Length: 162
Image (cartoon, rainbow, N blue to C red):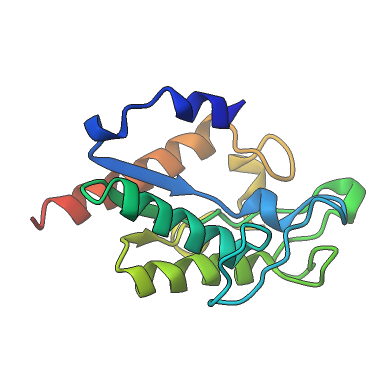
């Protein structure tokens, strides 16, 4: 469904594309967990490869569009998958969420794409989880407000320099 929505966008009229990815790639049952891959991957079958593919595709087709990466926030794992903090519990492929965060940060640095590390800077943690999440993964209204304000401030700081 999301892909279908993208087909209707005229990217010639777009200034900035903000990409928040990683949490669904990290978590799921074994079949849904995306392999992390490596920085030189170009296949869409790995997390690194999908990032590289996306950046190269967008920069070739729409070089005037600025890209911005946003990492996942800290989160718990679903109860049926153990329920522990994603900080201490790896996924079914034995990768931690922080590895997906680090991959996005590294690719952002590589491509000179502004990257907001929500995982480390949003303030969300196991200690305040009950105040910002409706379950193990999904933010409540307080969580969305915190995330929205953090992203807004990052965009303002990034684009007010120009």
